[in-house]
Figure 1 (cartoon, rainbow, N blue to C red):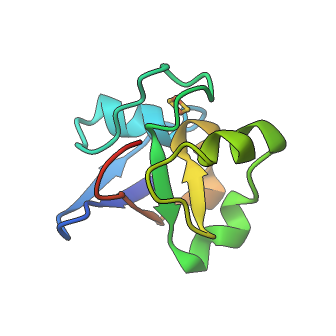
Figure 2 (figure 1 turned 30 degrees about the horizontal axis):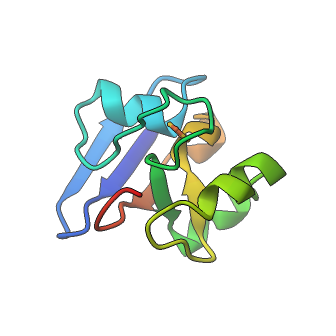
Figure 3 (figure 1 turned 90 degrees about the vertical axis):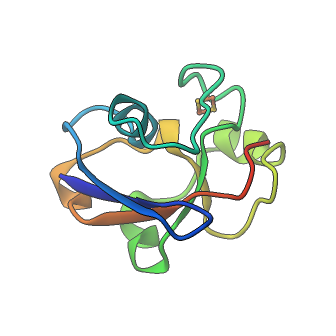
Length: 105
Ligand code: FES
């Protein structure tokens, strides 16, 4: 599935992700800048924070309670904030667009 990451400065990176990995892992593997992922995907750092494009919010779903509380530590959480390590890449997410914050928390 294709995922597009849009940096804060507008630079777009479209990659072909493997199903089953997380949106964070797909970014790291493909050298997309802007996702630090300090905790390595354990939902414990909030430095894999992304903003999910409005048209994709339904498909990516809502954060679970642990993710929700970690999001409070993200630099600038918004309604469409998610931790990208908690979004799993599936074929239904083909075309997903996420935006990266200016800084990670
Ligand atoms: Fe640490 Fe996602 S990588 S919360």
